[in-house]
Amino acid sequence: MMLALLLFAVLGEWLQPGIISQAPGAMVVRAERSYKDAPANTIGQLLLALFRIGCLAMGICLCLEPEGRFSFVSFAVVCGLIFGVLMVKMLCNVLLNYTFEISRLFAGPYELYANIATLTCLVLYPALLLTMHFGTVTSHRHVLAGATVLFLALWAYRSFRLFVISPKAMGYWALYIGTLEILPLGALYFLSEKTLSLL
Image (tube, rainbow, N blue to C red; front, side, top):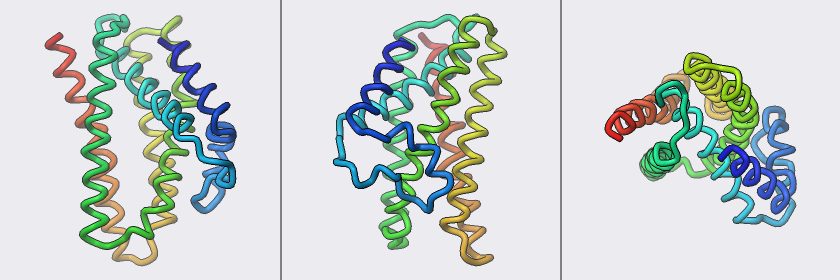
């Protein structure tokens, strides 16, 4: 399964040059990917999304399965849960956008969000490989927790620079991070734990 995830990432980069190799540059530019002038390739972006979902699902499965053993059924279920949580989160973002009419503010951050998720998974993937061969369930949990903190820290830093332009905006930003970033990740882990305990 890890080889399949690596193949998704390599094919994604091949079909959409720069989608992975230039993701770290997102931390120093305003919001846009530097490969923006390249022709968009939906399949390449889909493959990279599968890579990100697969990395997160693998990390959760290794944390929750007894002794870190891999089960394809558990992996598929967690992938489905991640997809479901992402859909709910996207609907919440659309509702937020519709309610407050901030479409111009959210146009750039969607690209930036994908870049940061890609960057986090590029760190998570080799860490998972190492813990699969040399680690324990505890080390899997440390790796997943570290990747989560890295993602939240990078996204909080970049979104703060994008959204916070006044003291009042800081409250909205903190509310956004808590409800649409931290809460979905916690809900995903909780749902995965309850679902896998029933399998």
